[in-house]
Amino acid sequence: MGLQTILRTRVRLGETDAAGIVFYPAYFNWFDSGTHGLLRSGAAPGRDERGGPKFPLPIVECGATFIAPLQFDEEIDIVSTVAAIGESSLRVEHEVRTSAGKTVARGFEQRVFIAVRDGRIGKAPIPDELRARLEG
Amino acid sequence: MGLQTILRTRVRLGETDAAGIVFYPAYFNWFDSGTHGLLRSGAAPGRDERGGPKFPLPIVECGATFIAPLQFDEEIDIVSTVAAIGESSLRVEHEVRTSAGKTVARGFEQRVFIAVRDGRIGKAPIPDELRARLEG
Amino acid sequence: MGLQTILRTRVRLGETDAAGIVFYPAYFNWFDSGTHGLLRSGAAPGRDERGGPKFPLPIVECGATFIAPLQFDEEIDIVSTVAAIGESSLRVEHEVRTSAGKTVARGFEQRVFIAVRDGRIGKAPIPDELRARLEG
Amino acid sequence: MGLQTILRTRVRLGETDAAGIVFYPAYFNWFDSGTHGLLRSGAAPGRDERGGPKFPLPIVECGATFIAPLQFDEEIDIVSTVAAIGESSLRVEHEVRTSAGKTVARGFEQRVFIAVRDGRIGKAPIPDELRARLEG
Image (cartoon, rainbow over all chains, first blue to last red; front, side, top):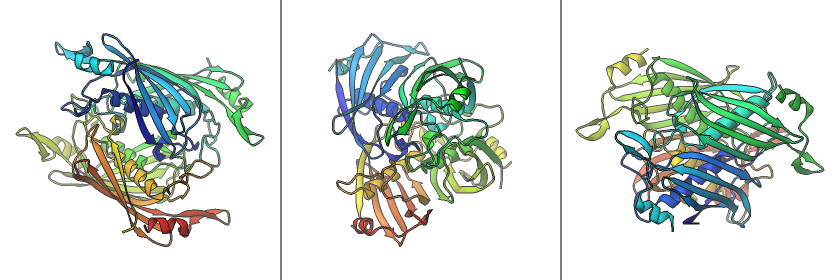
């Protein structure tokens, strides 16, 4: 396991739905924020000149299991951990916990680093700078 | 395989992100809409007296693979199919296609029917009315 | 008054919140979709080569009044009308109606056309092609 | 002016769009979070037994002006201030600032307190407990 970040936040009203609990796509929104927390270096801006993420790592696969529901205004921790780094690929595992420490959901993201080469976008080796950071 | 619905929509600007493509949690939002399309009967309102879904089927597991990116304003079809119905469980499989018929993402939702019994919420048998409809 | 479009859609579960009704920022998401419906020409793609809107018209002011709540699964019409076109500015007015024709919300967006000139982004005259279309 | 809260957060990727900046409905999502920060008392849970907000204050009017764009990963402060409290009404004013202190957007929400009386939902006097807190 490599780098880990914990993002503490509070369930927003807009993340819930009329069933009275968090609408499940919101968990992936949190996972994405967790991953960008891993990608962000201390001082450097996390974006390129167009406003997109500095390190483009589109998602190729993801999944989640949901253990217990979350409600509006609950304080939560999104714990994101680098689980595997390949030549071009990055797997991040996520856990959502209440601030009391109870795990309510687990998930993963499988991403691939892309770059423009010879005028075409395709998968490319993860830059050394990023790799070193992610390996913690 | 049971019932299938196709929901045609167009990628909204708010579903994209600064990388210039659809932000991946939006696919699960579409999957959820597809499932509610399956749950909705012809004329009956799809909600209970509190505004929540008439048939409460919280998610227990989900996943997706992403084959090609989608951009703002693309016209897409969300094809949702009942893949399995258990005593209390429902598995729906989803495919997102461009209007030209190209599959760009596949995913699934595993849900469980819940009801209040003896003052507690727990999993419960899928009602016959719903089961009959979902079996197509 | 110029061009008008009507976008029929259904309230998604993710657009509601735990109060059992539509979460109000969703209305602006609908307004934005309505405006892009006005900007889209019949056949032309509505985006530039980066995936952003073909005609960049960032928002400078907006507002809405809410007359009655909306719930999950309701069928609605978003009626968007070009209200004023200035040298660089565009005002669009929006009305959200139930499919039974009851107005539940009204709002507006004030936007300004921008372009890159001399390496800097700034407001610019609305292109004739777009102006002609918006004037209906 | 009454109570004020400042919510520091970071622009999430899902809050941006393909134009490379924050999608404007996201500001209202932030305003809503700011208001719930005002409504939340120190220790008390901010929700009722159904998961909805403890103090139901649906929106009747809102608006915003946008001064400068925001990008992915920017750190921002949402400054929310009680501007007026009527018999049943609450006006909250919001300002979004970069962490460097630059104001990038201003907005307001006009809300009304509702309660169930004689089996019907309607506007009702703001409870003394809430009024006292909001008056700072």
